[in-house]
Length: 112
Length: 115
Image (cartoon, rainbow over all chains, first blue to last red):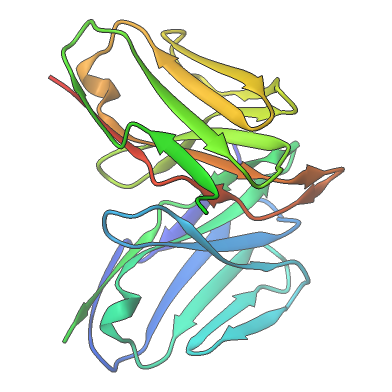
């Protein structure tokens, strides 16, 4: 079945270092979304990418959608302690647009 | 104003009991969801309702029964609770039009602990 995978599962970085998480889908996605969940919190929508090769920036966060629309990445420049949390990518299921498949998430720890 | 609210926030109960979790959204969305997040943080969709109609029903035990009295509410009733039901349950809502998929707004979650 359709799967969405993310690597790494965990990442520990020193504050100020960069961080990247990668998302891979077994099928082509019409769009991809990224969410952030702080410890003890709920997932919060960050961004949606739709076009092949699309790159979007939000301050220190850079999101990219692959040319084949099967992979995506989230890069954080100069991490801060406020970046701590789990980052999920999510894509709509091919046969059911209103069902979203979430990746397993990447948990980021930032050491001050 | 809270966009998506859930009650209760915490729920501790004994095995075999029946419990309900309520969800309400004031965003005017037409689609609502229930997700289960286990201890490993995996977010798994359980149910989806669009305009009060059940759209998605994943392979969830039939002890779980969702009910949507109107577009703004989606409740989850669980019968005969089991230890494995312990998790955080998130309600979410979004606007789905045609084949356009929009962001989901999540509630704060209900942490269910079955003893």
